[in-house]
Length: 117
Length: 109
Figure 1 (spheres, chains in turn purple, orange):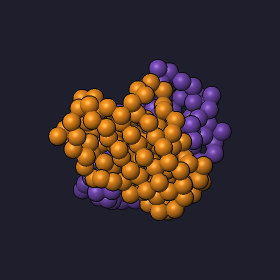
Figure 2 (cartoon, rainbow over the protein chains, first blue to last red; figure 1 turned 120 degrees about the horizontal axis):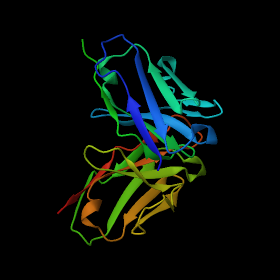
Figure 3 (cartoon, rainbow over the protein chains, first blue to last red; figure 1 turned 60 degrees about the horizontal axis):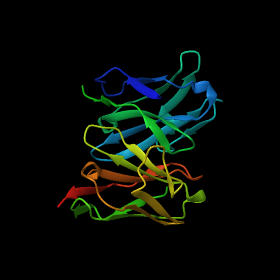
């Protein structure tokens, strides 16, 4: 059974950088698929952030691309998200998920990230 | 950016009834790469349908997807108690960003 689990810092201060990691179990990232990050906030609904293939190929949401980095560590079976210059508008539940292309079939439980001074 | 508009916003139905949810795209979705998800409170979305009409693994056959181009439909043939939830469509075609609709809530009448 494929399982994904997000880990992160909890509260973040404005202007700081968010770093999230998604640990994958039950499936080896190096076998393929895309791995992505999606966030959900009451104001903006569901928003796709970025995806990465185990080969290193990446796709970014153009509206966030200048602030986002997605990376994969196949040795740890993890992938990560960095989002710089955080503001209150970035407050959301952040999910990691697996996708054949962009259709996400396995999701983590989500982690709430609150941006507050 | 492709904007997905879902209708209706809320659907009030009784168990056993048929639910028809609509998702309209502002431009054609390449490859008909359109997915449907179900989300319950406090849970992550669950993939129901991919590529417009293909059921994901383990999804009951009362869920079906149809459509192409800019107009897509999710049909639940007979609502079960566990089907009352919020449903989202998402396009993942060649035009980035991949986007989600605003959701349709299916509530018990």
